[in-house]
Structures are given as structure tokens and as C-alpha cells.
Length: 590
Ligand code: PEP
Ligand code: MG
Image (cartoon, rainbow, N blue to C red; front, side, top):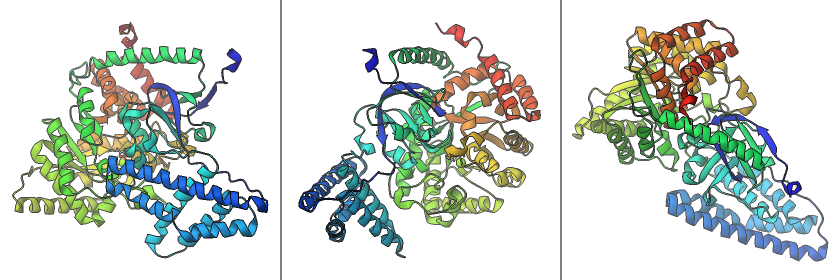
């Protein structure tokens, strides 16, 4: 019996979202297709043509089915891209040229079809017309589908996630993640990515484990392979043995028991053992995250990533649609504060494949506030929606990616225009709405004094700050080891920003993923931060920690860490402090 048990294979990656899960893999194929090439005897040519016809019909059937499903789930607008796919399939030129290629070369249909579609792709790519250039994606997509049918492979799409599975992919774009049926996801495994890629942030907000940076897991795994993922240590085990499953079962239940202890603190105030009340907010993507955030003990929203609503659809949501979402969040959280961050598109956050801007350095490109200041009408739609929502609760507005004071001043001017427009329509809003700036660009960190003149609060986005400070692309797995929150430059920069904010009487929070990793929480408060904001699921642990620690000790820790020069020494000082506070949690677990 034992000899039939397939061999267990262990893959090491980056732990991106905690938890243990096991189940069947759902592999989203992205890899290059291997196309065989061989000669077809003349008498078999007709048969080869028939294979081609059948594959085209099957592709048409698949596309029509997906179109129907998407139209039902996401609406007609989103479904329309599949009409373009059907048009490619019905393109006589593509079909006839493939048939001719088969006759002329006597090669197999896969090879001929690939050759012909590549020629079409090249011809379209060379065109000046942007609309026609965009058709390249349709041809690529359709050609891949037809080739996979010819090769007997099934093309998976995210909508086919009918049972609970672990998603395995080369990468998951934020817009793909937005279209998952989230109830069916047991865990996420990606070849690329790092702890701060947006797909990972979403996994964490769903509370499902994720392991990323596995380089080639999607090639090693096939659909329905049974796998186990350990999001604590960043390990994926293919074909886990009974013994492994048992061992991880024990680990999982131990972690669940610890989590239960943490949850006893969730609804208690975040007051340190020496009596200081600290502010703890949640990072959310929309109204759907609010119940969980409140259950986990959020006392406000420190970061509402408003782009999530934009990424769920192909068109920009209008002012009323935005107002509906924002005011719902404001109402659900009232009287707690809700910080609405204005649109932060760009980098790895695209509206859909059709809106991808071709830039060499998208993270340093036309994103966030840069995009908004050039699309003023769109930006003002959002500002008016935010202002109107401020009548329903305690709403603040915050701008992302500010790199100089001029951008902040320009954004504020548009906010004033939006206020005037609301006034003219008799719409209620908070006249004294507080304005904040994300500090996530090193240049902004150096001019906190100048920025402080034009806003009331700062929020430090450590995800981008670290990427720009260390010149490490936050989603590139090849250099993920260089993405180092314990780098002394990161600690010094955080200290500089927080001290400057304190000096200027500006409220300062941290909303990047560093704030969601409990080992950094004492450091951040010890440096003088007023607030941290993190994914809801981690808040009970953070509150438990805060209620155990003394702020005075955290301040001493911060002083000690600021003097250290070695990332390992910094990490071990922080871990030691964390473990000392958490001692005892295990005794409470039966
Ligand atoms: C950040 O950069 O730290 C941040 C919170 O913003 P985002 O992750 O959405 O870029
Ligand atoms: Mg950012």
C-alpha cells in the first residue's frame, strides 16, 4: 500500500499570509505552451483540418459559456470582452491562412496555427492605431485557448472555481483577485510576488494562507494535485503524507487555540499595561470588509483602499456609486474615524487588462495622485463622493504617493472646488474634513515639515516606502530577499518621519504591512506613532500584545533598535521583545 503513496515534495517560498490549508490545487496556467512540430502525410490532411474545425467550435463553446457566466456575475460590460474573442475566432483570414499553411508546409495544425497567429500578433503590434493594438491581447488569448484544446489541455479560468481549492498561479493580478469567488479559496500559492504584493494583501484580508515567491510551483503542479500550504513558514508540500497532515493538523489546532486567546482581547480597548490608549484601525477594500474588521476589534479604518471598487469593473464607478460604498462604510464604523484614500491606481493595480499602461517603470510611473491630478473630473467625482459620505460618519480624506508639496496643494485646491460644488447643490458634508498625506516616497519623508503645513495627518505606507528607499520592486520574487523592513535605513526613515510629525503636532499612523506584523508594533508605537492600521485578521493579536506591553518599554526598545546597524540584530531584538510579551499565551492554551 505504502509504495503507492506518491512521493512528498517540499517547496520553499515566502510566508505571505498565515495559516495552514490543504486541498486540491487549482492551477491557473500561464506557462509557455510547448508546441510539437511534425509532418502530416497527405492522406491525413483532411483529418488534421477536421481537428482544427472541432477545436474552433470547442473554443467558441467555452467562450460563450464564460461570457454567459460573467454577464450574470459581473454585468454586460465585463462580458463584452468575450465578444471580441469570438470575433477573433470567426476571423476568416486567420482560419484560411492556417489551412493554407498546413497545405503548403504539411506540418501539424498546432504548429501551423501558432505560426499564423504569431504573424497576426506581430502585424497588429506594428500598427499605430491603439485600438487595433489592443486586439493583440484578444488574439493571444484566443490562440492560447485553441492551442490548449488541440493539445488536449484544459484552460482554467477563475470563474470555474466551483469547489474549494488552493489557487496556484505564476502571479495573480489585483483585478484577477477581485474576480475570484472568495468563498471557494482555501489558500494562494504564487511563483512570483512578495509579502506586499496586492494579491497577498487580499489573501490576508480573506484570512486564507498564502505562500509566494516559489519561482516555478505552477509548472511543478497539475490541477487536482493534493497540496498542503503552510503560510507561517512559507512551505508548500505536494502529496503530503498522512504523517505530515497529522503534524500540520496539530500545528493548525495549536494556532487556532492561540488565536482564540488573542480573540479574548479583540473587543477590549488597546490600552498598554502602563495605561496608554493606542489607536488601532483596519485596512479595508470596501463595505464588505467592515463586519469582519469590527468583529476583530477595529476602532476605525486607517486605510480604505478605494481603488478596489474601481478594479472590480472595467468602467469608472460614478459619483453616486462611490458615495453609496463610502457612506455605507462611514455609517458602519461611526463614530470611529474612516480614512478614505483617494484612487491609487498604477503600479501593479490595473483597472483591467484593457487599462494597462505600457510603462517601463510602472511603480515609478503615472500612478495614484499623479493620475488623479491629470484626470481632474474623475478625481473630483471621487472627492465629492467622499465629501458627501462625510455627512454619514467620521470621514477623513488622504492622498497617496505625494512626492512634493505642490501636489498636496493642488489636490487640496480640487478638494475646495469639490466642496464648493457640493455647497452649490445643497449637499451636506463635513466642512472641516481632515486631510492626510501618505508618506511612502523617500522624498516626502524628507519634507514632512513642508507637507505638515498643508494637512492634518500623515500615514506611512511602508510597502512603497521600503520599495523606493531600497530600490527593490515589491513584487519581484528574484529580489524579495532584499526587501528588508529591518534595514537600518528603514528604521532611521521611520524615526525621522514620526519625530518630524510629532514636532509639528501632526497625527501619524502606519498603514503599510509592517504595521500588520506584530513584531514591529512595539517599535512603531515606541518611536512615537499615534496609530497603526492593519488587516482585520491580525488585530486581535496586536491588541493582545498591546495590553501586555508597557509603552515605556516599547520606547526603550525603539531607542535600542535605532542604534543597531545589522538587520539581523534588529530583527532579533524585536522578536525577543515580542516573545517576552507573549510568554504565557501558551500556558493559557489547553
Ligand atoms: C503602502 O504603500 O504601504 C500602502 C499602504 O499602500 P499600498 O500597499 O496600497 O500601495
Ligand atoms: Mg502605497
